[in-house]
Amino acid sequence: MLSPVLSIAIVNYRKGPLLLACLDSIYKTVGDLTVEVVVVDNASCDGIADVLPTRYPQSRLILNSANLGFAKATNQAIATAQGSYILLLNPDTVVMQGALQTLVGYLEGNPDAGAVGPQLVGPGGAIQLSCRSFPSYSTAFFGHYALLTRWFPRNPFSRRYLLSDWDHGTVREVDWVSGACLMTRRDVLERAGLLDEHFFLFNEDVDLCKRMRDAGWKVVYVPEARVIHHIGASQEKVPSALVIARHRGMVHYYRKHLRRGLLWDRLVALLIWVRCGCHLVFNALRRS
Image 1 (spheres, helix red, strand yellow):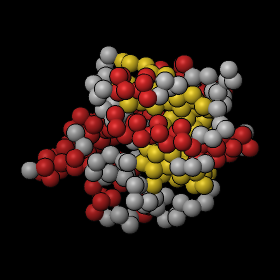
Image 2 (cartoon, one colour):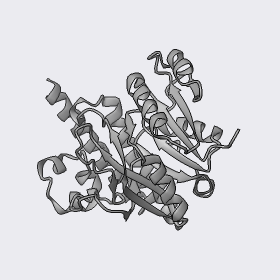
Image 3 (cartoon, one colour):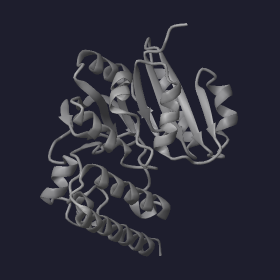
């Protein structure tokens, strides 16, 4: 049996129907590309453990007894993967025709690229801002879900971070691409390291791309590859636990990559948690 060229790592948590649609799209569009799919289920209890072996016996399923988080579960999948290329793929995605081949082809033709990401679009075709600049100290207040970005979407800080002044229609070197669909090479992961398991959910893709860039590789957005992404519910519907996880990841990222001294780091952490509290209050008011 031929070794796969591409290993696809998918972490599932209560996304059973979307996961099946994702797998349908992979096997319908894979063509002559040899792939293996490794699904890690984080104790979803959504019946996927019974369905997957029958519907997709060619895929590999790892069942966790608890929700270990995205980074740790992804690392489980990577540890068993055999491909020269590794794709991190969310279960709420649908791979469009030719997308996998385009991303593999770009990495094969550009050895200085450590990671590539496709153009992510919503179910209606709207382009999602899935590649961005690295976070700075202003990003805590001008990020994608920040209240100031919602209220003043054209402010220069948000535009610079989100790259929203660009049409996302051309190949471009960027700081980081979304882990919803991120392809890299095995040798790059061996040198840059796997996902940081201190990130339970969110920011692990930013950290991975930062380490790749620091090691000398490029991160590239390749819009010729297109993937539909059923992005999560609007921020006001996000469970409080996920809001807290997002901000805990922010604190870890800032401490890891933007340290400036104990007092300053503590102030930044405090401001991030204040931001978290504002989001929780805002979400509670929206729900009520």
